[in-house]
Length: 137
Image (cartoon, rainbow, N blue to C red; front, side, top):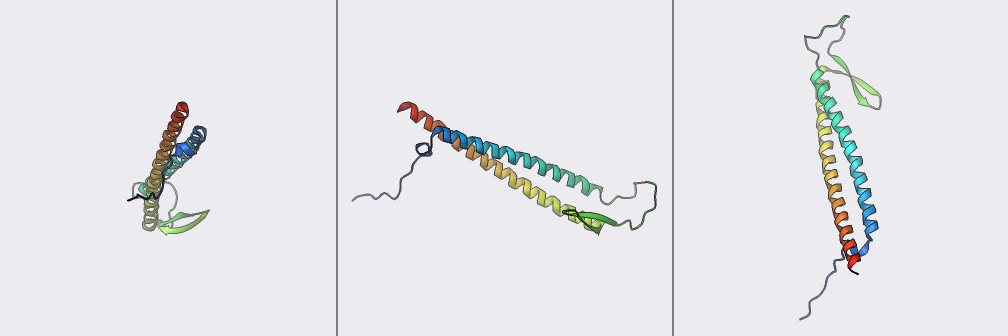
């Protein structure tokens, strides 16, 4: 009884040269660095958002000269330069929702960076494997 072959696995090192694999590693490492910079920016936004939530509402301990009118109305940035008036409670809710969204983006970015790092390791090991095979031929 003959066995049938359904497919054949070809190592990446047999398809791509070590130089090509090293260039791929460099591209992936560069992409991971860009993602880390984006992650730092997102974390900064998240931190600023937490600080901002702790500032709303003002409370009874804040004193400054002037006359207060409509003390429960705040301007909230909607994006692209558009603002809206909201109550302190509504503003806090908006900021909390933004914080949750930012944390989700931070976690997604961490996952993307981990994937890129794993891809870089795969390319590095494949390049090393291809280099070793070239030395023995």
